[in-house]
Length: 120
Image (cartoon, rainbow, N blue to C red):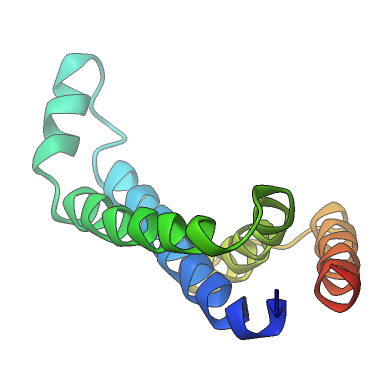
């Protein structure tokens, strides 16, 4: 198993999943003043939410492809790239602040990913 060959799939999966989360956040923010069942009905028609659903379908297909060739015990820890991408994407696109705990988490995940990639 040459894990390095699969890294582009994990990066692409992280981009898909992160982008989907950004769109879900944007869609939910657009209707945050609405409460109750009307909020959920508006989400079902929101273009950002629908786009997030479509992106997540591609992400799941990519994930199934990866799982067909890699052990779950190796593949699942590499999904930590998703969290790193979401934090940076939320800071860039949603102007959210990255606090010290998140920086520590990013460093921890990165070290873990590096160990898995080099020795997994």
